[in-house]
Image (cartoon, rainbow over all chains, first blue to last red; front, side, top):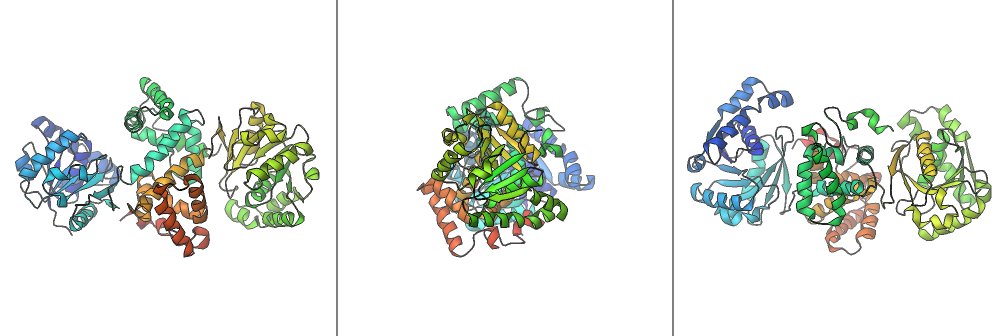
Length: 297
Length: 297
């Protein structure tokens, strides 16, 4: 068991509110800090709106959900938020300037023993370690959307992270119902995106260059590997806007990806932005790939 | 329905004997041609040894299996083998010189209407089209090991392939119980390996550079995508020797892959060559990743 009881989540956006509530649901005392009263109110609303998902997806009772809520508080006062924190989980916007500023402020306000973790998707911990005033007590713990279902926590330290602190965070992840994914070195993209992005890029190449249709690609992957969905179904879950932005950021003007991006752009112009909009490469809620006959012809 | 009734499979190795028998099992008259009496006898033995697999894996009866056998003949006489062939499926060794010679001989002996397909894993059809004397009637139809279970046929023409012939082969694939995977252009690696190899390379990077353990990588992939196995379980199925050879061929002396290849070499030296040997990254027949608890901690 860890010594982490009081947890502050900084940033009550989609992921921050989920990480915070999941911790509270598992018995931690959790404070969400956000930058002003409006942001704090929105965070509280997001947390309360998780009730149906917890009931539907993991069979939580109303009593259990309420017990989690009772473990939570909300504030726009950073000093108040972190003064008793054993752990601060940072889930502020993914902009380096915002994160640098945040850690520099936090370093001054948090007790010196407080551990800091970052939920950053794209920055390794050494990027912000110098701002924290405690590089030995700073590492990344990265969650996936719908944390109660997609319950991995990818854990990655810098070379300066104390192994004892690292192990404490691994144990914390377990305490809040996560499967800890341990990285032994810094790796942009952690494990999941390091694996996933090359697969999606290969699929983008096949479709972008008119070598094979999205349904053909997905069918091949599903039959060949036994997976429940193929790369284009994954694009629909990720959302075409996000896929477009990530491809643009990583590939820039690489001409190999231009046909793919042009095709994605055309789909977005037609309102086909993925599963959330009801249509992307497939039409939801009953996409063709989920029909058992999809694999038979 | 196609006009393809008489089929000759050239090369009675592991894949050739499976492709031949699957065609015969589905009612085609099939001749296996191989280079000498010894090779022909070995092919006949391989075909007969498929009985247990067909009974176990797809519930074939002995009568059904025998009916398939009755559709088959075997010969080391190429002229005899192809004189009435509507289709010749080439499954000779994956060496360009052998394939060039084979197609040049075949071109002289086969009727001018005979369609030729290649099961080549690595060469696109334009490589051998000039040898065939009929580039419009030549394309690739690529099968996976255990064709009765892994029933995809990746179909890829060159720019010279007649679309009517291409469609006839798509229909042929369906007639023999395959799911046709249609490629609209030449693509080395077809669809499946175009997707799979970047995923396996990313996994090789993570383990090779000591960023994450094989079990961590597989667990992340299985939880993150719902797949029944991760990249290292796939390496075990492919076999470490094959994985080593493909990596060596594709990456040469690329230093990013050296740590992975050194580690694979060490495992092979210890006799851990994958699922077929009983041990690779996992121990068989009950590998850790197949245990439901694998995903829980």
